[in-house]
Image 1 (tube, rainbow, N blue to C red):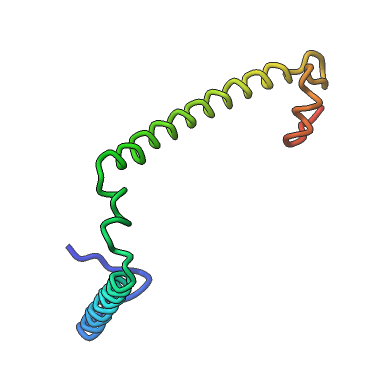
Image 2: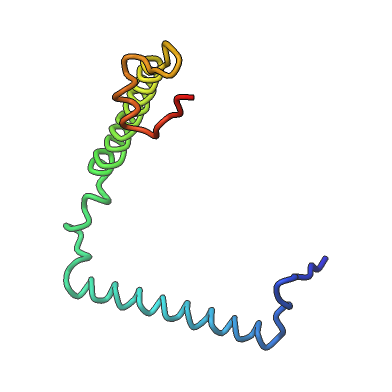
Length: 119
């Protein structure tokens, strides 16, 4: 099933060939840049085993990835819990007790957020 486009016509055979040529040129160029980069890194000794050992040693990988990931997740959970508790406390504390007035947290809460209508 062919679909027609409203914005432009389907590319013809010359355009398809030209786009394939652009793709081949781009891939060859990117591979050339990658090879040049790796060649220069190797020439300057940046690909030596001693420099890359932390990334291939299982003990280092465990310390970097597993322990770091667990610490990050613990901090994220504690931040979410703190935000929920903070929002709940200030939400309850700033609830209006009389018409047009906020609770005990009204002045501090209204100065840190958008102003609310007193109507």
